Length: 311
Ligand code: NAP
Image 1: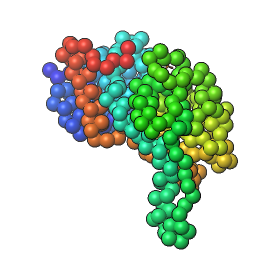
Image 2 (image 1 turned 180 degrees about the horizontal axis):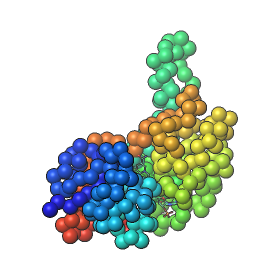
Image 3 (image 1 turned 60 degrees about the vertical axis):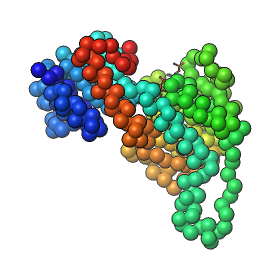
Image 4 (image 1 turned 180 degrees about the vertical axis):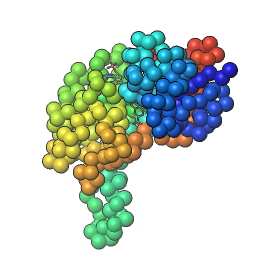
């Protein structure tokens, strides 16, 4: 008998094929009435495969669920506390994406500081011919980059930035003893002393609007904000207002509060680089993440230790 697995969102084709082979799948995303669908299959579900989403109600609709395996490292859309109380382990896909997400963060930082997106448009629009060379930009070398969240990805960003001869400092809830970087207890102090902030903390209630007006104003009119974490971590209306009023220099943004909707005010700003949540989005990295989703499920149903449990 194949174990029954609820698939919350469609996953990569190779993941879906491997799931089909080993499990009896129930595809929630194909159901017109999801509540009725859960009411009919929930009892049978022993595993949930998802992409960062599993509410308490969804978990409760599957009273016999034994494991939740999620694609992605962010678990702010999963009620993990509820799963823990119910004794259901939750697995995500950490580490295999550190390098890619760190690359994306650095691309956003460099593209923003060197105005690559704006100057690409400058060439395409024929302005180079008509108006000559655009204004000079700034160098990243010697600048202080403040990393908000020196976890797995934050450390990868810090290590890569050393090649660009940046000074690195960081903010987190606790100081790390295993890094040479300066620790700030207050994120606004870090912003005040830094030329750029790279935000890479988890999303969720604890970090909601961590980057608020106080922090944005501390970063100041020459400062650059890169958000590769979650839209919820930055007070988005404040960010837009600060850019409009020139209180913040520039921003490189991969994530937004209401994806895929992006505040339209940002579209006309040449000092802003926008990406459609591309942090880990290469075939190679997404394959590694998909494989980890499969491997965690397989480990559970083979009675082996889970590879990357949250708790
Ligand atoms: P991680 O290893 O758990 O690191 C998280 C870091 O944030 C740690 O330094 C932690 O330090 C700090 N932190 C956690 N809660 C905090 C709080 N309330 N206030 C201040 N600092 C806090 O996580 P990771 O693997 O590096 O991933 C980080 C996040 O990046 C993910 O959760 C996800 O949301 C996001 N992400 C985005 C993309 C994308 O495509 N844009 C891709 C991958 C990941 P302390 O515990 O000492 O505070």
